[in-house]
Image 1 (cartoon, rainbow over the protein chains, first blue to last red):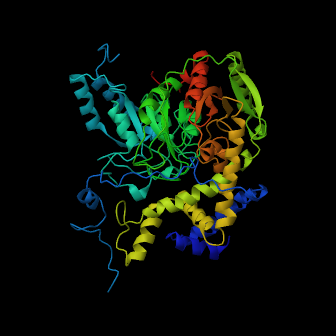
Image 2 (cartoon, rainbow over the protein chains, first blue to last red):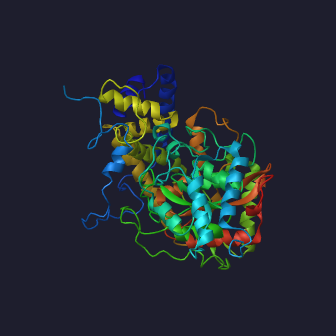
Length: 93
Length: 470
């Protein structure tokens, strides 16, 4: 873990890191990665990954509309919206 | 008392709000729901109800969406969020008659073990000034411990119900993964998150659990198995029941007094007729590193929805869309949340995915296999809940790993999806300690049975911080 890697993953995460905190964050992340490297001690050859304790395929339900339309309520709690859309700064000139 | 008309529902709720006022220094609540709660209690006085939890005041963790009531998840990015719907578990509790008196403080997005990461400030443990209540459900635990409410909802991703329950001297239960619907719970790590109750006793937890569980079509991981009556098994004798004691557990890093209290509790269970059986969970020591790959990976994905566009807080005057995302997220999230998102992005990124994320999921299976094997021959497993009693705020220093190790004993139950409870089992330096009882898949009834029988023969669950009125 170095400064360049942290710059890349912070961009992927859409987070900016304050200059004065950068050194500490690089150090923390480096320590955490070193800590989780213990996992290499385990022999996992031929072990299937466990993604979810239930290990059941996600159930599907009948394709019926059960929720009511909350468009008005949802647009009302948005930081910026008009009658039909969420508003953001102009993307296409 | 309510049914005898010695006290009205409204008087109970008024008493709750005066307790909140008296305990303001604890900072256990982020948002109160006073007017609607008083109104609901008046309605109950006018039209008495036979609902199972009619009029019971409950504190709801601020991670559950509550219709028309601000829900912050302890974060600046949601400090103005008023959900247009309630979580299924909130609806279940309210439909059973509970009155949601307010939303409790918590570590931001449930990421923390001391309630020191909340945007709304630290919560103080009622057992001592400057002591942490544990986390992430620190506000819920403090509210029950201080006698403000008899019950609280909470959530547990790596120990967030059991660890604060232990540090505050109350009972807290994390059910089997899938027992309680996650719909309307703000997601942290979806394959680990599970809601559960906090109360003074195991019996009260059973009453709450009966109402919290339901099959929910809106959550694809919600179980459709039979839900037993969790009260039914409470009084089963423990004679000849088997308690698994993990022989690989290294207790040397624990406070000596904590080990003694733990061993005394095991003797108490033996006196109740149970047998102690040595078991082996050889991969247990890898549970914390496994968790700190899996949980951040899922969190980085779940928290990508907070972008300042659809709800929550938006940064002021962004020059373009990219800056809107980056500034809203950077201003809205605290340091611990950012740290975990970054770790998650790293372990999921091309080139590292197999080395970290896949590897951790493989070790997760080894841990689950260890439990499956152990449970073929025992009823429950016991461990201390935490390494020690409540610690001072700020005492874990600035190294995040020291805080992560706080959940050493609790994390494995989340990785394997198993139910587990923490009950008060002693006192060290006038601070409570807890013992953890882990059950087999879907076997909440057994852990409640062991917990209840312990509470019928000991008084630790009745010890309260000085000045608490019962």
